[in-house]
Length: 136
Image (spheres, helix red, strand yellow):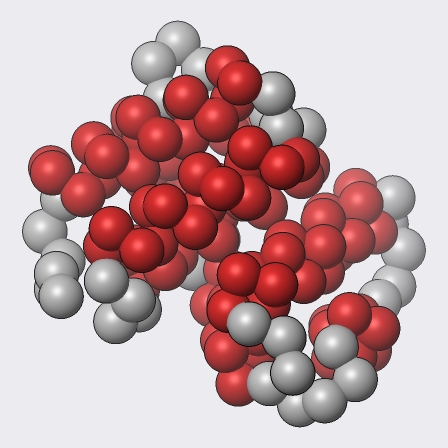
């Protein structure tokens, strides 16, 4: 069984595939993409993927609010997925805020460059300190 960090990474890969397929106007099945990443049904993975899709506009708007002279759409699709997972977990789940931020930053360190990781950390920190939501 994969740990939560590995499941976040799987969610990032699923979202990345969705963004690529959508941009190419190709059909896809979200459940099939999830199953490619993790054979066993996993509620946490499903929640991350479907939550990021359900709240995509709100998450994007929130990211753009704190991205200075930048927008989420300008980032590559992997970085977009990491930002959205981090914001989704921070705002819409019961994951402790420090864990949500740290996990997104660690994922960014693995897949992005240092500038994007710093930008992500700053955005998540601003959301944590400036937005109203249920903090654990």
